[in-house]
Amino acid sequence: MESKEWENRVAYLGPEGTFTELATKELFPNDWTIPFKTIPECIEAVDSGQVDRAVVPVENALEGTVPLTIDYLFHEADLYIAAEVLSPIEQHLMVHKDHAAHYSEMERVYSHPHALAQCHKFLHYHYRSVPLSQTTSTAAAAQYVSEHPESNIAAIANIAAAKQYDLAIVEQNIHDFHFNHTRFFVLSKRNDRIEREADQGPIKTTLMIKLPNDRSGALHQVLSVFAWRQINLSKIESRPLKTGLGDYFFIVDLLEDEHAPLMMGAMEELRALGCSVKSLGSYYTYQQK
Image 1 (cartoon, rainbow, N blue to C red):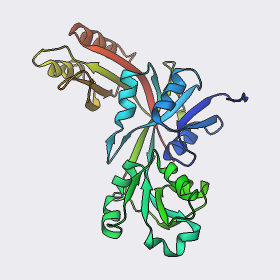
Image 2 (cartoon, rainbow, N blue to C red):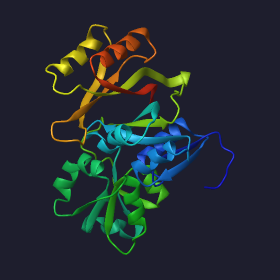
Image 3 (tube, helix red, strand yellow):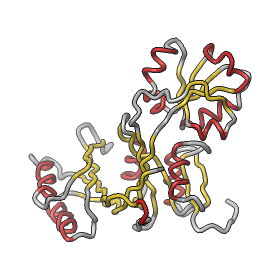
Image 4 (cartoon, one colour):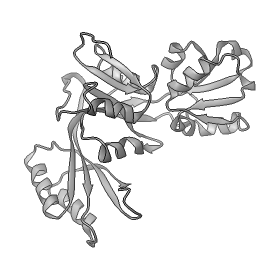
């Protein structure tokens, strides 16, 4: 990687033109942003010190959690969340400009699996017989279409991808629901937080909790730790531990700073109950404009 004079090197799920790049530019408009092909590559780039931060998708309002992000943070990397960005998701159907006049005869549609799911009704009613192919990102789909002008194929991606890869948008706003957002984590090797007073949202703390084995009511006890302290949970979800059927850990988002006295007491009580607790830090939420 060549040397440049930038304040931060920020990895994001590429290629150029992804929703992740748009979220990255929202918080880091003046930093060196570097696309990586996969979520694990982004996370490993931070973990190894190749970059200072990484921006990766973690949850979509319609499709739910991105399991790869959560599982990698639990099993593979020791990182912290420095911020989260909430981005509106607008999907468009695009083709190579050579095929814009007869795009309805397209042979295949490419996109990220979440984007294909988000546009299910549109595809079902208008292009039911057209095969669908999954890509690592919406921008990767747009890039593939641009590199294969000989084929009458389409991509589902955002307007930035259409501009980046010089494609023609032939159907706008084809997503089934128009309140869709994606949540992105900004990851760092240091437990710090990004603070911008202008549009700073509420503070959150994310914990990964492994319950003690073979104890009846363990989850109830964990929830009670937060309930009697009046610490609000904004999300709780289980993920497989990958050690056997029925073995899970829980990812919990709490609307409180991890350094607040009540939170510190909650963490001590969780460990006293025999829980394994991994904090991903406290961070602010930012809304992409």
